[in-house]
Length: 118
Image (cartoon, rainbow, N blue to C red; front, side, top):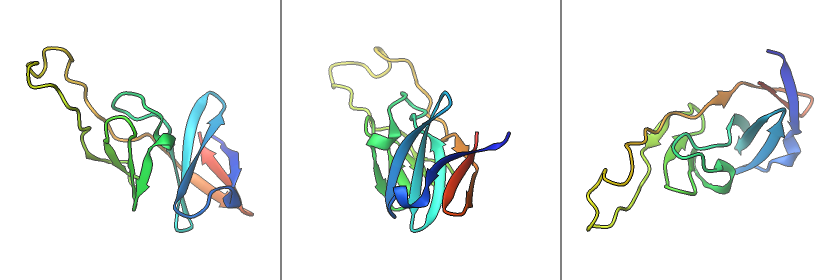
């Protein structure tokens, strides 16, 4: 697929992230000390918007259930943390929801413009 211009480098400060709507996709771009990474904005666990989460080093933490993903690889670092009241038997109210790795996008930078391969 062709690369699509999404942003300018100076729009995303080091250690920050920003969400962009690109065609029919929601993409978050992270600036880790001048290195840029792009991934689908929705958490693979329960579809929470990841741009509302927080960055901790090279990991993003989902704002809903605290699942963690490595920004560089897209790999899941840990499963979500879900509290179930003691009086409810685990698994009786919710099916086992699997958490997958992030969908990452290849990035190319030309003349301070950020392009992604959508």
